[in-house]
Image 1: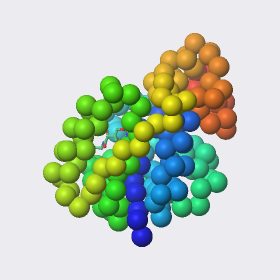
Image 2: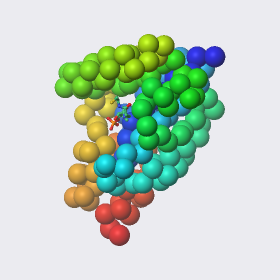
Image 3: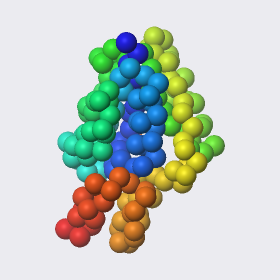
Length: 159
Ligand code: PNS
């Protein structure tokens, strides 16, 4: 069984993330979405909220699972029997960081390959940080994030 891990902060999940999850679920037997639970950062949503939102927006995909992790990505991937890490690439600006990460992860575990998927062009400008900035100004999030989570994001800013 070809298992892939799709890791990220997902704070919050965007339509760009969901597009990569949907497309990778078509080419892999199973996709495990790995939500980074990083205590060094103060996220807008805690890890369990992010996991719940991802479970909600991927509920139509039977071969997608969602889990959180706090250690090394390669160890998380190995614990799920995944030999592939899927990453999305939006712009050239993403490339350098992702290239370094892929090489580092390869030295940490030679059995695991990083595979890149180009973003759907209609989502190439979307990032979780842009979504948060826009939400902070009460901007319209329609089309940027899955419809089910728009109110959850708004609630974080309206209290
Ligand atoms: O959505 P993000 O914040 O760009 O995702 C970054 C992520 C989670 C893919 C990256 O930070 C990561 O892999 N973190 C786990 C720690 C790790 O394995 N780092 C690489 C070796 S130091």
